Length: 462
Ligand code: ARG
Image (cartoon, rainbow, N blue to C red; front, side, top):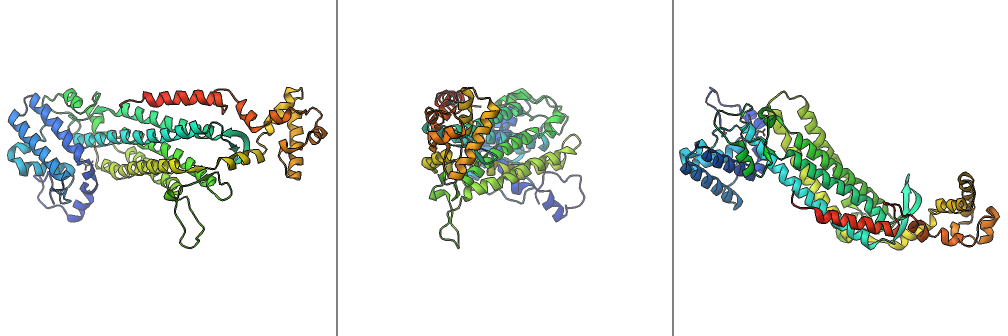
């Protein structure tokens, strides 16, 4: 047992209590952030005359050497310490002696852990955003290459109206674009530094909190020291944004699974992103998409877990908050893996454009346009709807598409039909006439793609 406290205790901690309380097995992830935060803290302490220049230099040198030793594998983060903060401080004191004991001046583990977690999450918001941007770029490439790839659009999973693959992928582009904007939003709101809040009531040392905040790249210091140590809103906001990313990925996965099925065959997932069956030699399964869909649950779980943990905690710090880490780390790892693998699958997936087009032709997706044809020739819409309904019934009986009927067959159902109907209800016409912004017509799709390219180019550093 190696802990930072013990002075007021007359007994050793029970081993089971110690183990239950310890967090080093998971908060060792915060190692780099802990060192970074401590360096900023002592640089500020020296500027304020609380540490001498020599003390500050010795501490910074000690912390830097601990960091490089861990990075190079020369020093192991041992589980004998209670948490990552104790590990760093104990090692520092071992290395530089008394000066090391001054590191924690004007600081509590409460503001220290609040800072470490914030620094960690802030990096991960950027990392997730980068994965999202890679996915957006892949989607844009599919969109640009498939402006004229016709396919059925669905409602109720029933063929509804024709659209294009470009348009369908564009829907996912918008979802993941909003995810990027949500990440930027999380970043902006969380970017205030809790360091210097002490246990919860600030400190009597003349700290310059704005200075340490600026050293760590924050917008400024947080404005209430009690809130600073008790706040995990940014973790919840991030997990909420991650849950929405997973919901989007899961819907997309569901479509890939359907499209990859033997019945649809709209896509073929690359061999490198599929798996086989141990018994059925013919099988090529969409496991990546299924796993992404499946892992959505654990990310939602993390969000609900922290929301629940936080809801009953009185101000300020309570040990419950140590529970913020494991599920958050797991959710972050999961989402980054899912984004990365899904993107790899998308980039290597083959779109069977002929099958998509045939499916659109065979599914009466031009029935609305056939009704509109009649409306444009004076038939009231409700009557036109009925006429096309009859036509569809006739087609089903004959096993034909509407545009495969002869003009005589069409006119037998409504004399309003003329030879120009074939052109009017072709897949191409049906799609290309849809020119309201956001619709699949080529001209407006091109405009939207241009706007979305500008969006991607406008994304700078957070
Ligand atoms: N391991 C703790 C956590 O993750 C660090 C803060 C401990 N502070 C305290 N007062 N016991 O929350």
